[in-house]
Structures are given as C-alpha cells and as structure tokens.
Image (tube, rainbow, N blue to C red; front, side, top):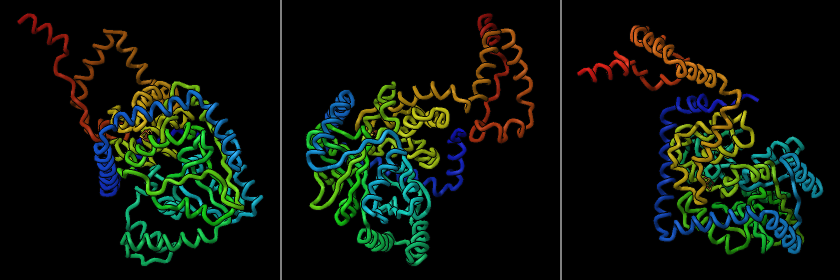
Length: 455
Ligand code: SF4
C-alpha cells in the first residue's frame, strides 16, 4: 500500500486558511480548559503517577487480569468472546446480531470498531448501523471518518453541519443555530433508539475484579442505546482492562479533565451484568496489541484515549486529523500506526516537531516524543524515504572527502546567488515553500579563520 503523504494532506487542509485557523483555535481552547481543570486538582501530578503505575502494573500482568475479568464476567452472566484481529471481531459481532435477528443497530462511540471497519462490514450484510454520538453521527452522515477521537467532527463548522442536516434530516438549510441543530439530531436519534434491535458500545475500562465494563459518554447515548434492545455487544481492546474499581477511580478523575476540561464525564455507565431477559456480550480484541506489548513501544498501550495530546500538538492542530489517514490521529496515533504498518505510515513519526508538548499533558505520562523519535528510526528503512536516503548517502560521500566537499561548496557559492529564482523555488523544493534558502557565505569558514589568525 502507498505511503501516507502527511505533508501533502496537511497542505490540502491548510488551503482553507479560515477553516485551518478555526481548527487550531478550537483545539487550543480545549487544551486551555484542560490546563485549568488540571490546575484545579492540587494532587494532579500524583494522580498522573498513580495512573501510570496502574496501567503499567496491569500490562505487566495482562494475562492474569484478562482471565480474571473473563471468569468474573462469566460469573455475572456476561458472555465473553475473544477476537485475534478485526476480521474476527466483525465475524463475531455479525454472528451475534444474526442469532438475535437484529437488522437495526445503534452504536455508541468506539474507536476500536472504527479501527476494524465494523460499520461497513455490517452494512454490507444488510444491517443498518447508526452512530449515536452526535459528532460521530455527523461524520457518518457526511460519509467521513472521525478526525479526532473525542471530538469526531471538530474539522467541520456549524454551517457545514447545517447543510448536512438539511440534506439528511430536513432541517432549514440556512439555520446553523447549534441548539436548533442539536434538537433536530436528538429527535432523529430518538427514533433510531426506539427502533433498534441491538446496541453496540465501546469500552473505556473493564474491571477485572468486578467482571464488568465501564462506558463514558457525555450525551448518555450508550445508556439510551442499551436501555431498550435485548442484546448489548461491548467491544474492547485487550489493553482496556484495569484491576478493579479503585483503579478506575484514579483513571476517571484524569480522563474527562484531560479530554475536555470537565471534572467528570457526564455519564460513567457501569455494565456489570445483562439486564433481565437480555444478553450482554463482551468481545475482547487483540488486533496487533499483543505484538505491541512485546515491542519497545509497549508504553503506548497505557493510553486511555483522552485526546489531550492531539489538542496540544501544534502539527495536529494545523494539519487536521484526516491528514494522518488513521483511526487514531495525532501523536499517539502516529506511534500506533507506525508500529503496526511502518511502511505505510512512515511519514507520521516525522509529523512532529519533538516539542514534547504532548508528553506534558498526557495523563498516563507517556513519553510520546521519545516514542515518535524511536519510530523514526524504523520508518527511515521504508521505501517512502528512498529519495531522502539517497540524499543522505550523497551528503555522507561529501563529508568523507574534504577536497570534494570544498570544491562543491565553492561551486555553490559561485552559482547559487546567480540562479533564477524559479530554479530555487518550485514544487520540487518543499523546504522553500515557506522559507528563503540561505545564501552561502562569501568566504568559506576555513578561509575566514585563517584570515583572523593572521590578524
Ligand atoms: S497518549 Fe496520553 S494524551 Fe494522548 S490520547 Fe493517550 S492518554 Fe491521552
């Protein structure tokens, strides 16, 4: 598969300057809300260290906690399934829906099912899937994917949403009042909730000791979706398990504050057993995670998907989530994607200034900029960087041969200032799009030093 052209995608995003500025400012506003929320908790850094310890401990004993979760969940009447990859997840979910005779499904936010392409898989089998998180419903109606893991439609402005709703929900085309649009979405989604045969949710945390799953939403859509149908399927990556409800207390205090600057997510819903007469099925998915656990990048499995690193990242804010062509974009997404498919996503670890802003806001204290730097070493082996490798080999030849180096530099000093401007600044010189190429000094450094010594 072709390498993702992050720089090209970012350039396309930046063409609409007003939109790009708005995107940057909107995310920075969320970042500032996060800062204020963090500052309001005196023990914030202790909480971060505790969260890091909880997740690292869990990963170190992952087999134990997953089997404990499975046995406790089964004892609570929950059905537990295991999927090695996305295809298996999709097959298991489709099978459960078939058994249940489900034709209409409501789904709350789940990046895992995005990662595995579940919606398309089910729709190809005649099952209607409605995403019920407002942002996700917007991008679903637009035929797009989320551009942010917490704010899926942050790349769209309200007038675009108004046009979309007018086309699909019959609202007034020119009315982009958020209250009006939200009410229209609510009426539309209420109908979907009432008609649904089954509900699918993601999982924010799975409690091993208690044998239940926890889903955090701000809209209550997971609760509404699971309230009526007899079948609830919860899909979780295997890294979502935590030891118990005490550990959960640490993580939920960090999650909402880091994500949106709220003290707590509006709904933190615990599903500890099926409702009377109903089925609760949990599908635990690997899809490359156990490989990551064995690698030098395993720390990224402690991520709780708060999105703070994206809101903080100067590159993400200015290039938009779709420029990464991944389910999870931004700093954490770049490491995850490059670990999974280093060839295809080789450009992503370079979509970073190594400023480490992400490290400072990450509630799990993931050293994201170190992870990105490590991913660069692997990425450089990819065919995407054939041209760059050739340039560096040429530079190595020059630097190994001082006479040749001096000759080339002398030629550059003579020729560069005389070149027509369009020879230097054209589509082949991406570096020069935003910068002036520095002209060489009139005299070489060695000559200047000699003259200086002579006085
Ligand atoms: S890497 Fe850290 S900041 Fe980024 S989404 Fe994960 S937990 Fe949040």
